[in-house]
Length: 225
Ligand code: ADE
Image (cartoon, rainbow, N blue to C red):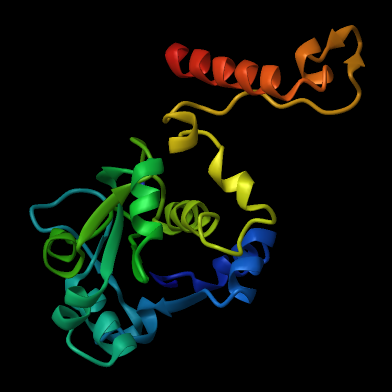
C-alpha cells in the first residue's frame, strides 16, 4: 500500500516511521510519502490559510493551496487523482474511525491523507478534492497530523508484514474473530503479585477451557460498553 500525507509538518512523521510495526511495513514494501502544502502554494511568503468569510476566529486552509499541492505532487489534475485513489480529509466532523473503516481503508492500494490546521479546511476541499472525511473522535485537535498518524497506525498494523505474528492482528479487539467485541484480558508473570492472582484457568494448560473463558470475557466486555 502507498499512503501519501499532505501536511504543513512533514517532519513530525519521522517519529511515527520509527515505530517497529511501521518500519516493518516499510521494509515489506509498503510506502509512506509526504507533501508539504508550503512547497506548492501559489501564494507569496508560503501562505496556506486565510481568514474565514463571514468573520469568526482562526484561519482556514485554502482550497487553491490544497488543489495546487495535489496537482504539484501527482503531476496531474486533482480530479484525475481523486478518481484513482481515496483522498481522506481529516476533520473533527467526519465519519468516525472504527475497526470497520480501518479494514476498508487497509484494503485500498493507495490512500491520500489531507491534514487541516487552525480552524480546518475550506469546505470545498472536503466537497471537491477529497473522497472521504474522517474523524478520530468528537473533539477538536489543533491539526490533522495526529489524526493522520492514528489512521496510519491502525491501517498499517493490518497490512501483511507489519506485525510479527499474523495471529496478533486477527483475534484482537473489535475483529470479526471476536464478533466485534473488545479483546479478552491478558496476563503475564508473575502469577501472583501483592495478592493479585491471575485467573486459575489461564494457568491450567487446558486450551479448550482457556478459549471458552476468553470468549466469555470478550463478550462480557462488549456488553458493558
Ligand atoms: N482535525 C481536528 N480535529 C480532528 C479530529 N477529531 N479528527 C480528525 N481530524 C481532526
